[in-house]
Length: 336
Length: 236
View 1 (cartoon, rainbow over the protein chains, first blue to last red):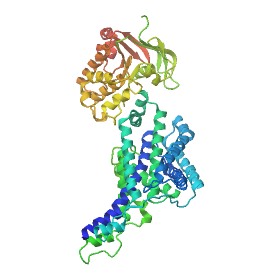
View 2: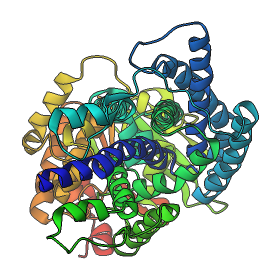
View 3: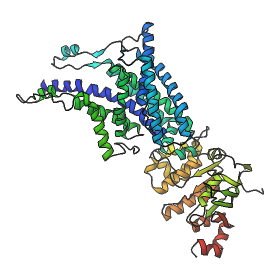
View 4: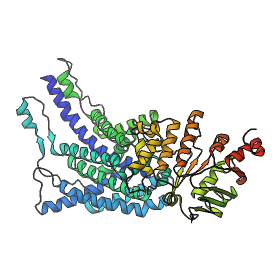
């Protein structure tokens, strides 16, 4: 019984939250890694692109809610998501036209792109806060839990409860669909293959008649869709606050780099690795050890390795270790 | 037909302010093999790149199949019927062999399977490895992928920049055999080679360049028989 309780506690407090957080990071990191692989720079505006997409989705969700439209048990935000994606595609294509294309024509060094993307980041930052404000926004509706604490306890008779939030299940399912679609697109379609070819060898892609501007446009569109989806799922799971999205940049970059920049599979693995380490390190293991340890050996302290306030240190530490010992990441990626 | 199928005529130009090519002329007839040889730094690869439009000419012109293409970009020249195999980085290493070939045919919108079959027929080893990433292949196999990729556009002219660089002598002989086979299908071949003797043996037309200018021109056999050429460039 104690062992079962321990397992349920780990699943409830570590595994499920880390899995859904990992899926959100993976979607974010996929966007970063695609931009790096094809436009060859680290896009610092990615977190705020996510915020922008989530913001538009929230505004449309509120509109739908006011109009009385709902999806029943599912959050209305799912209906609003396509609008958010469309608006974000428009936004990133406009920024590409206005900012990045200029530097592409100049054949500017990657670091120039990075700095330009920081400029874009600050502008987006301002736009989002100007439109929706700096505060927490709640936009989730529908059924909150798939399995609530009480149902689980009465069902199993255990002390510990396994809670599965709708947003968590939704995150995993949506992320799974998005990733499957992305990989199908990259590996099976002509355009997807041309994107991989362009990422692999720019000069040879030109010789084969692949149009770089086309590839760039498709990349931005996919990235916008991924970023918006990631932003909305994160907002549904936690809450929407522009500053949080800016802070997400670090774990997202850590995920992409750990997995190997430019490698989509690596971005997914990196996302889960970062999420599991972060949550594993900031979780107080007292309860779990209490179940597992022999009589009288239960720890007195919280057995929390790091306070939640320092959770970003985990991303940093992993990032530094990877850059020191395996600069191309766990999967074959480009060196940073 | 008085004019050759392809001619880069009196080409003068270089990458920057200084000219590398001086009044250099290379030409290929339909279905024949022309080889550019010469000492290091003679401008062999530069001459090839000039024909392909990778550097701007100050003087001279390039004519393909009666059409003046001097003003076209390399991409437009591919569409006009030129295939180019660079010396290095000539495959997509992370793509499978078959995907490499598909990307070669990117500009085409018709059915590419017959051409794919032709390439597999020419290079049977590629059929066995078609699902493998091109980066995992040996040097000789990679060169076959590179040549195959260029053939996928169904070019009228195939340009090879040192196709045998870094491969073993046995593989080199085999590659040359394949190149002859390609030429027999009616594709003209313009090739730069370090292995001058072997290359001239299969060449219908040879060009010896020295310091960016034509030093000797003639059929492959003539050049091999020429005592001057033998002494200076073929090591006796």
